[in-house]
View 1 (tube, helix red, strand yellow):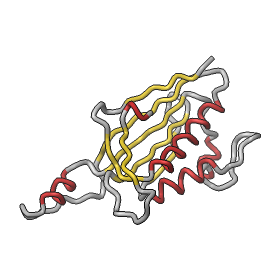
View 2 (cartoon, one colour; view 1 turned 90 degrees about the vertical axis):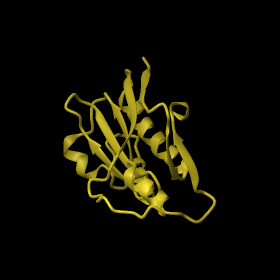
View 3 (cartoon, one colour; view 1 turned 180 degrees about the vertical axis):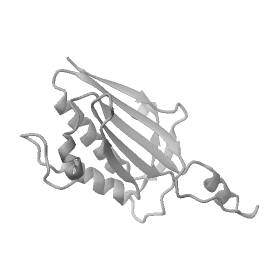
View 4 (cartoon, helix red, strand yellow; view 1 turned 120 degrees about the vertical axis):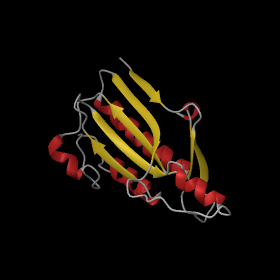
Length: 165
């Protein structure tokens, strides 16, 4: 049996400025984890959406500051969820999920999720783990749509679209 990959990504795509190589590493780690816990098959869904930060306050901008005004009124977070219908992460270990060297598998190193967390935090984002009521595991990643300028050649534009999944 195989794993079905489902996507729920806006057809227009969403652009953030981030290190694409590092983000690919995050998604590779999450997808490999899902594949390893579902040897008999199942599905993984990747969904992308936008939302406002809950703590964001509306501000007034002069008409000469059109860029800041457009950024303030646009959704300022990209929310990416990776959900599987596997056995689910053990409830008693959720608090340690992102700790280095913590693993729930015999062959795991315990570094995958801690690396994911470091990469997402380095991009001013958050990653969390949820256990959906219907079973399985869901990772929720929230990244700012526009990151502060970063020096160095590794910064690149990442386009979340169905062709990149």
